[in-house]
Structures are given as structure tokens and as C-alpha cells.
Length: 404
Ligand SMILES: Cc1ncc(COP(=O)(O)O)c(C=O)c1O
Image 1 (cartoon, rainbow, N blue to C red):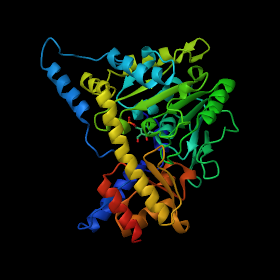
Image 2: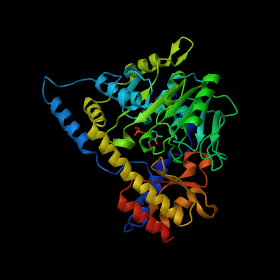
Image 3: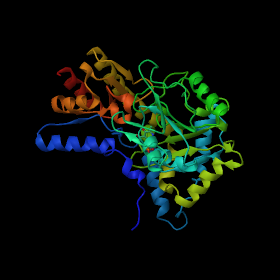
Image 4: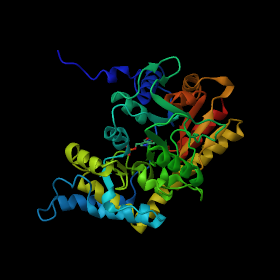
């Protein structure tokens, strides 16, 4: 009899968002006439912008003509996109990243889940707590997490770095030395951002202790404060210890279009082994490249019109963020985030647990958010609302909060 990868069987329950979907479906079945406002899942709601749509149409037309038709894309990405990214996202911020250090992909989720394959089976990983669940779950599947304690919600081999009110939701350096450190800033779910001097400490720690930082900057476009770095490579020596993951989902609304990239600098070496060459090898073996049409759409995001349109989308969502944040604050809630991030992180009132508040909010306001505990044990007692809804829904949700 064949055997399965038993690590999968260790994963507790279903994925956070499927649990939410089931609860919402049960509520809707029981209350078919109630309208629900969804501020839960971090999906965007506004359509793709004009420059992106134009680029998509014109790339589709190219596909209709033998002389401009494209087949398999280069598995590391078209150079027109890699060069544009290197220039706009890095050179213009004073970071030295070569186009061939950029690996174009179909999004940050896959890359942040797959990157662990480059590391030894017994690597110790450190994660912010709470955080985007993919980092932990992908390491559970790979057998690195040890055993799960359902009482505490902790895995025995994972090093958790609590992000709490006391530390401003920015983790402190771990007491035990990890091999891999996942950092996500601006953070999902807390909305916290890291200042440049704080991030430099992480980079120094990683260099001194032989760790790799996996820096997920999917929400980079939402940074509004001057002293918050947009890239880990703004820190000295980050090329020697950090991998960066980016997405076109949250800035340009590509959640359904799918495009992202990962930077693996050539200076990132473990003895003779080059992580860059290993990731290139992995891409070459397991991935056939993001579609030409989509990469052309990605390129269009960097033209002056594209950049202006992205700024428009980001400010649309940030308007929601401040409406939700200020509205809840005025009602007496303790709220965080919303300054460099499209997430509002609120403390559940009256000592309710995160899931109790989820149920309470769904039943009484018909608003769906995300329980903080779904992102890690230190998220217990918190709740995440996203600013990715429409203006109308964000305002309507607040009105419903006011009536609670
Ligand atoms: C921190 C973080 N990284 C990555 C992703 C996924 O991005 P993508 O749509 O590019 O896969 C998300 C999506 O919610 C996220 O919150």
C-alpha cells in the first residue's frame, strides 16, 4: 500500500478562510434575506485600471498573430519585466538588484509557500505571531514544524516571535537561533510596519547568526511613512542574508490575474551553494513561467500612467482604512494598523475571544471579519478588518458597528 505525506495529516482543522466561508454559508442559509458585508478575506474589490486593461488587450492581440505569438515564457520571467522591476522597485530606491536576481512568478503565495524547499529538512524556522498562515503551514507540510499542541496552538519546532501591543506588533529578536526567519511588513494581519533601523537589526542578526530572512513585502505599496523601508535591500548587507517576495495583487489588484516575484540575490550563499542558482533550478524544473499577457500587464503598472493608477487604487483603499480605523476609534474600540497597511487590527471588546467576536459580529451586524487567532496564538483577542471593500460597504459596516 502506498503511503501519504503524513505531515499533511498533522495540519489542524481546515484553513482559516474555509472555516469562515463555512460559517458564513451556514448563516446565509439560515438568514437568506440578510445582506452580509465582507471585510474578511484580503481580496481586492476594485477593477483593474485602464493602463493594465490596455496592456492586456494588446498582448492578447499579439497572441492572435503568428509573428507576435508567444509560447512558453522564459521560466524566470521576461527580461522586459525583470528590467523594469529592477529599475523601479530597486534602483530608484538605491538598492542594487540585478534583473537576473528577480524571478517572476504567479504570485507571492506560491513563492512564500515554496521557498522553504531550498532549505534542509531539519531547519528551524521563526515566524512572527500572528502572521499570514502560509509560512507555518508550508513548513508543516515539509515536516519541519514538529508536533502541534491544540491547547496552545503552537508547533514544537517553530520559533514564535510574538507581536503584541507592548512591542508595537514588531517582533523582538528570537532567544533561540533560527535558520530561517519569516518577516512580513507591512504585516498581515496586524497592519504594523517596521522602521528602517529596526529592520537593520534583523539583517545584522541574520548576518551574524547565519540565518536567512524571507521578507514578504506584499503590502509595500501601502507604506505612507518616510522612515519605513519599502524593501529589505534598503538595509546594509541584506543582499547577503535576505530573500524578498513581492506581489502585484494588493497594489494593482491582480488577485485574480496572478503575478508576483521573488528576489534571490547572488550574494546569498551557504558555503559553495548559491540560493540564487538553486531557486533558478527549481523554477526551471517545476514552473513554466507566468503568462506573457500577464507579464505585459505587470509591465504596464510601471509606466507613469500605470503608477498613477496604482496610487489611485491604493488611496481608494486607504480611505476605507482611515474611515474604519477612525470610526471604530471614535466608538471606543482599541484599533491598530491602517497607516501603512490596508488592515485594521482591533482588540475584541469585553474580553471576547477572536472567534466569539466573529460569531457575534456576524449574528448581530452581519459583518464578516477575520478572527486574529487564525493567524497565530498571539492574535487571540484581536480581529482583522480589511479596507479592500468598496467605500459604500466600509461606511455601511461602520454604521452597523455603531448599532451594536
Ligand atoms: C503577506 C501576504 N503575502 C502573500 C499574499 C498572497 O499574495 P498573492 O496574491 O500574490 O499570492 C498575501 C495575500 O493575502 C499576503 O497577505
